[in-house]
Amino acid sequence: MLALALRSIRKRPGRFTATLLSAFLGAAILMMFNSLHDTAGQPGVDSRSAESLSTAATVVGGYGSLLVFFAVASTLTVNVRQRTSEIELLRCSGATPAQIKRMVVGESMAVALVGALLAIGPAMLGGRALLDIFQDSGQVKRSVDYSFGSTALMSGVGITALAAAGAAFLAVRRATRGRQQRGGARKFLAYATLALGGVSASSTFAFSAKDAALMAPAAYGAILLSVGFALFAPRLLGGLLDLLPLSGPSGYLAVRNMRRRAAELSGVLMPLILFTGIATATLYMQGVESDAIKASGVPKSIDAKNLETLNLVVVGIIVAFSCIMLINSLYAATTYRAREFGGQRLAGATPNQVLGMVGVEGLILTVTGVFLGTVAAIAGIVPFTLVRTESVWPDQGLGIWLSVVAVAATVTLGTVLVTARRALRTPAVEAVVLAA
Image 1 (tube, rainbow, N blue to C red):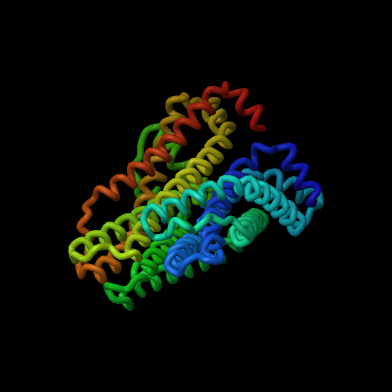
Image 2 (spheres, rainbow, N blue to C red):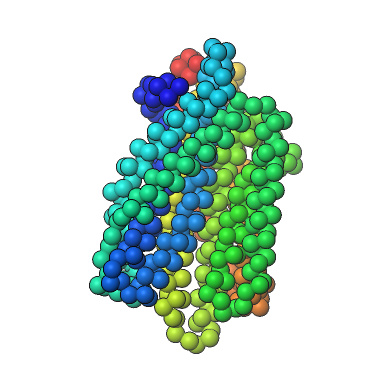
């Protein structure tokens, strides 16, 4: 099956582009930050500089590992669901579910390893730029030299390969088992993740206002709640569709298609919910922290500067990573629908009606993802603000949230509309024949 997997990659390289991009970006982020561990462990590095570098690497290592897994999982889920007919043909030809799993896992690991190796160069450049940021802010001495060693290399390659193998195994397991069997495991994981997120966010109340780690449980709580909501996305999306009073050809087609593709769309909602939840929570909590320090009249300490720099860098990377993953998932999911668009046009729908349907779908996805991500962010922001300032809501206003929503809406609607417009340029009969 491994030989079949390698031949599949050679014959259809375009199908694995999304997985390659996810692995490349994920490995680059992991190696970039974990190289700070190698830098901090060099002989002669002072304790303050080593602490600043190790803190940044440890915090982002936790964020990064989680993001890499779900980014790879979302792209692989879309990929495997698009191969349902191929998997069924293999099973009819005598392949067992275990053989199919080995084939898909082998494909994913091969692509992930290639992506991780390609990411080494950009990760070295990014790690050096991170060190310059810490040195410019006074958190690391200028005498510290950058180092890219075994910790960065092994973490990037190892975590990316494990994430690809685990995500591929889960995706193909869902594709080769019945709906009823796979629903129980997903429901259990979703409930467990929501429970852990609630516990993490609630544990913020166990800290004092001056604790350096006050932001950590609230931030991780928002991330875990975002993941839990993403796992529940098909069910929540179905409930929302029942409430929408959409009419007209585009609205009718959008609702029917989204009901049928609710499970597939969960892979698209995942990066959207993560982006909204993590970006909103981290930016508001950092704003509350900065205002609290300013109100105290005490100059920012090295630890405070370190935390602020770390949060801003993390948010920037998360925003870029999540946006690229969102574009990646949307492009793959929309491009695959060329045959569906062609069939709708042959059935009487005009190109504008099909494009309108895609726009309505994108709008519903945006509203759903932003709503769930905002709920997860609020669950982290409120405990942190209460402990840090004794106020329920932060004083930053809606500006930050509106900016996050604007980015999410632009990326989602822009990607689906541009991709659908390109697909509609192909004549309907040709699109159906080519996709078949």
